[in-house]
Amino acid sequence: MLATIIISLLVISVVALIIRKMLHDKRSGKSSCGCDCQSCHMCSCCSQPQDDKRHTA
Image 1 (tube, one colour):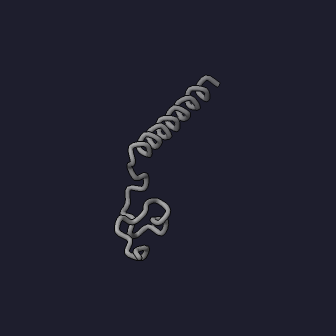
Image 2: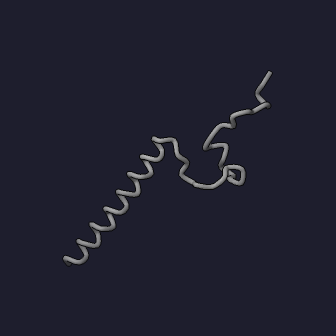
Image 3: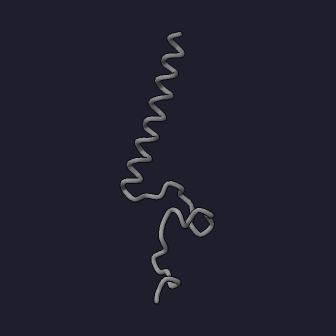
């Protein structure tokens, strides 16, 4: 029983540290995927293109 509690606390700590790191990276403006956005099918959700000529009048 003690081993289960220790392992559970260890897993919870690791998950908490991962979430903390992800939140810190998000606040710092870092990308969470680590890949190039041109090959990502969700790139329009992550960031706006800097030079979008379609919306100029």
